[in-house]
Length: 341
Image 1 (tube, rainbow, N blue to C red):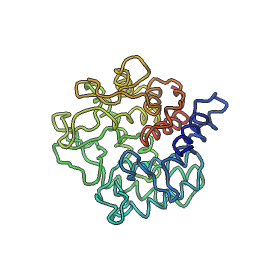
Image 2: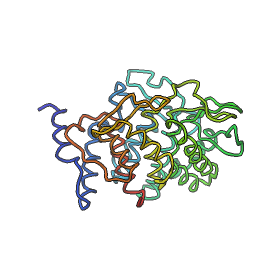
Image 3: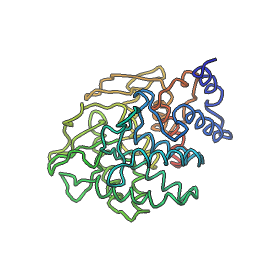
């Protein structure tokens, strides 16, 4: 039996939905399978659909998942690899992508704020909740640089702060690029409180307001420009709702905002796939369905949005790529930490 078939059988046996009494052990089994598939022994998290590249998002998610599952060894390996290979900037943020080749692994040194946010939050949780105290200072340093470098005034209300997608992302007094799926209110607030950075808390508050405004648009966009006149199509990206925006209801429900209007908007988008157990994962600017999926990771986010139990995993889900497989595990952590709907 080859490795892929072995893992498929393992998934079917150990990563299926479990009764409440065994949900914790099921989550642990799913974590071990994810670790075997997507984390190398040195701590590098690989994205199998992008040629085995690694990125700051994947390292941040991996650290969070390792902490949530009490896996100190994996956590330490991932943080060591991340600190050595991605934390190469003059500030405390990370280069966003590492490409596996003999030399020049970093092609673009710019950061992606969501990766830095999740890494800092995972390090804070490790020190605060897991007793791995040596990570606290790094978490605070990253949080302070996010506050210093990755916020911009809202052109419509300069006293309000927008979380920028990167320290070097385009911004001007009259137009700021915004990725709605980078707003993770719980992480921003906890880091802001711990680091004494009220600007991060303000960015979380205003981010939720922006998401509420966007919920009145035809779709929740992956990217959007915030201008003096309101929202406008982004200059660098197609206006659409797809794999970035899928994370919006995950982060809101994880933060206890299950009644937020963007959660209902996201659910309406998912349900546009119609009956049959699939969810819409890509919508055009007017809401027309472009792609649907029955992957367990995407169905798990839809279940979170409707405050329903997470769907059972099947043998087919063993073939999930890095992104839906990661979302499935994050949804398991979110449902454990969000409180009641």
